[in-house]
Amino acid sequence: MLATKDSNYSIVIADDDTPCREALRDIVQPAGYRTLLASSGEEALDIVRQEGRVHLVLLDMHMPRLTGLETSQLLHQLDAMLQTVLVTADVNEQLMRQAIQARVYSVIPKPVSKNVVLYTVVRALARFTARG
Image (tube, rainbow, N blue to C red):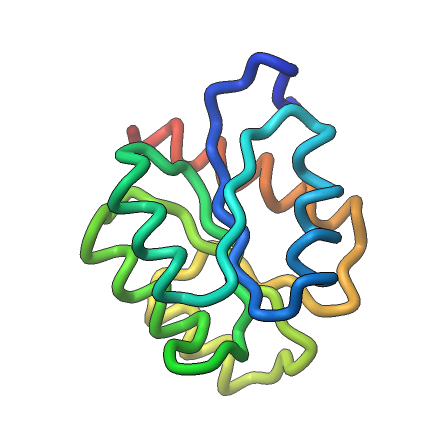
């Protein structure tokens, strides 16, 4: 169930590291998703506010000012249906518990696998559609 080239799904990718942000874009955009790039949690929040309808946000865990978890919590205040996914090199039990409490859909370990990213995106969007 990958998106088609005329997909109406919008995905924000927030990472303060440009190569990581662009690598995620290079995975999801060719699958047909509209991608919007943010270099911080604050910028991701601004994009979601301005765009009106974003379906998924991929968040780096470690960004200056707002972490991925903090950004996820603020995004859910804007849109409770919005699906968020954390991307981090530091996956551990404590982070997983925090992610569950913050209603994060999934945590993807870095370095990312194209197949894992696409599988997670498809599943998260299916969940969004089922709720929306």
